[in-house]
Amino acid sequence: MLMRSSPQQGGDMQKNDKVLLERTQKVAKAIRKEESGEKTPFLVFEVNEKLFAIPNDDILIITTGNIMRALERIDEPFTGIVNLKGYVYNVLDLNLFFKHADTRDDKNLIFLKKYYIAFCFDIIMDTLGVPAKEIMRIDTPEIPFIGSFFKRFGKEIYIIDVRKMYETYAGS
Image 1 (cartoon, helix red, strand yellow):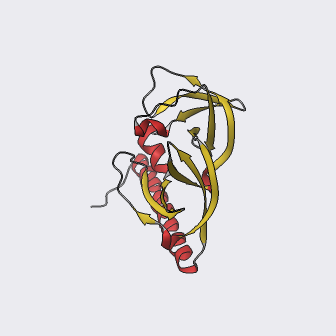
Image 2 (cartoon, helix red, strand yellow; image 1 turned 45 degrees about the horizontal axis):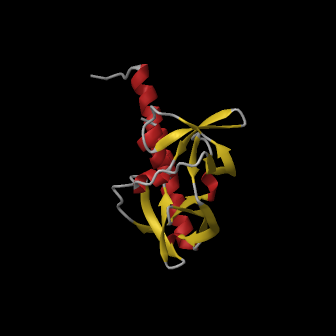
Image 3 (tube, rainbow, N blue to C red; image 1 turned 45 degrees about the vertical axis):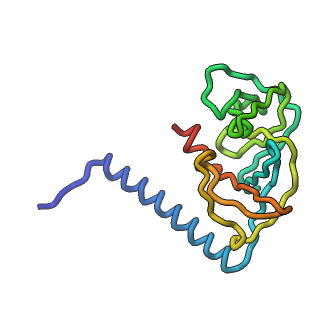
């Protein structure tokens, strides 16, 4: 007996195929990058004396002195919203993961591409190119969107997985 799928199932299968293809392409790209020794550029910044990194490809713009609108009924780690060129961005404060609230009205922010999220930061440290072989996996249950790190300046620098962060907090 021949089973026919509904148009809905066909659409879901195409979507799943597309997701699998994207993941396969990312893995293949990562393998090629590791084999070639190519370096991934990261922006390194400090929050509460800890170092974090975001791939340069995920950054839209970095600004200082933004006035954030604090919202009382917003889920942590988000603290409020800010307007950038007519678009509203959710502000994520990494200080909250260390039980240290940033009470300043003006914020230094790193705006992310395509996710409408901005990170608060204290200091921009540097932009670094990091070979894939130097990036190590890590399990950080207290900050679920940190899955890897590398070492520089005698310290661990935690890499923010922007997509995982979005799926964990904003995508739900």
